[in-house]
Length: 213
Image 1 (cartoon, rainbow, N blue to C red):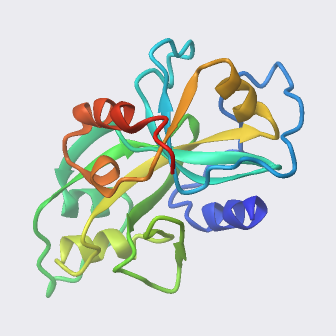
Image 2: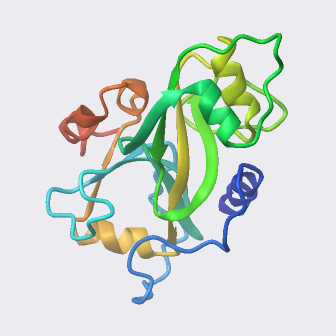
Image 3: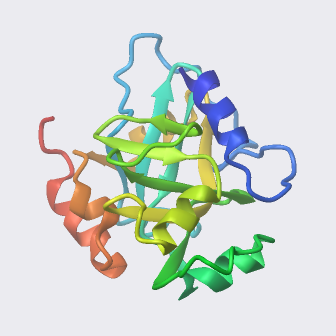
């Protein structure tokens, strides 16, 4: 499953990026993850209050995939900019059709420290194109600028996040960080992921962390 999702991520690259790196402390190889889990694909990874890595302090991550091969996810509460959707599209090299009217602003989030030039749209599963991949928790991710264009035209998904970069862990690395207390697991919640109140997402997720799923 992880290999499949990584291939999907490659399709989502909107800008050329370097070879993938791995988030976390890659200098200390972790013991391989147990083959039978537990694994938490589709849930929320919530940074603990004593998170030692400043890149993830206060982070809430949608865990897109997690298995014996490793894990990767998307930080959902790190906005880095906001502006008119038309300006964003032009900045990425799209030439808009003069007959189309784009409205509204979009907020850009930093999805993680790995491949910050890779961009994609995480959204509710009411929207789909030929490059959309369905994830767990009624969430999907779309692999092209068409999703951003449709958002600007009022034809996009009901709720969405535009992200650059992602977080990744090698086999056993995330499990080691969880045993150390760096991370907690919280159930997926649509409002936590897609709410515009980014500053309140960590508090919301912390309140449900550790609740049986």
